[in-house]
Length: 226
Image (cartoon, helix red, strand yellow):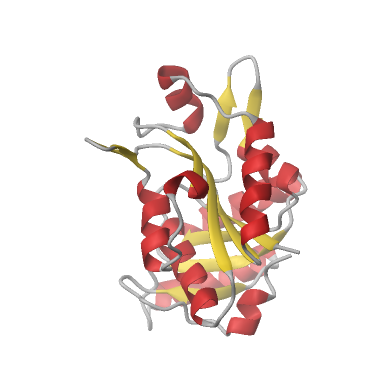
């Protein structure tokens, strides 16, 4: 039976797609049948061949999954807005039943499925007559989460607030990964210490800019999936 984990972040442009790609790549290179899925993507590239969902395309290439875009992401919007606003402008709002069916299909094809969220954890996915927040999707899919945070200035506030919000919503958290990490930085080492003290969670890996490999034991990575 497929195991999964949901990747969220402390905000937009923290680098969760980059880290997600390295996660899936590491699993696949270790011989695991690992895949990727994203519910909604905004800000897709407009080409003569249609919309290109950049996040999904990036993970597909980095991890050498070889999957079709249709199977990687269900809702694609061209406007670089929150999915709820992009859907109001463009139409095609997210339907929970369609999301669950797409996730189930992906889960039948892969033993380990990494699901990437949109923006930070407080992200409206649909907000019209029907209201769907990102946390609703996590709960419907029954997934635990991993938080991607920027290693630099401001991450104590952003990470602690993210963790506290998720705990208030009863969302299980497996740990934190620091992205854009600079080895030897006194501030970033202190950020790690303070985040761990204030949240009770572990920073399980550090990712530097332009890393091509996630530096974490493969068995430890596999254990995150449930």
